[in-house]
Length: 144
Image (cartoon, rainbow, N blue to C red):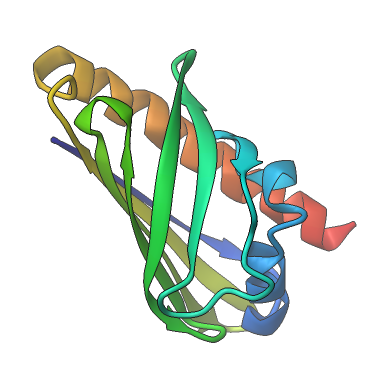
């Protein structure tokens, strides 16, 4: 099992950051591990929404089928997913007002038959870099 989390402040209001995060058409423009969507996407995210995505980490692709477990507009989004080879993952995004900006925290936990020992540590290291790059790309996208 592995877990990663990163927090940064984005110089934009929570509503603008939330709109960017939940715009699934632009998701691939900032989420670095996103490769493509599989099948139909929900018109709007809400608790109980389901969708499938191809993610690629460390050169390895996996299809993850997600379910939105928690969803609070402009504040919090948590989804759990299952993938090939018994991979299980939980991803959460939390927004909090901070001065004129927004504190963004993205975290992920992952487990599975193949995610153990040195591979789990390697995925944590690569995943943290991916999350940090994703938040930077999101900020750039929203400011353009």
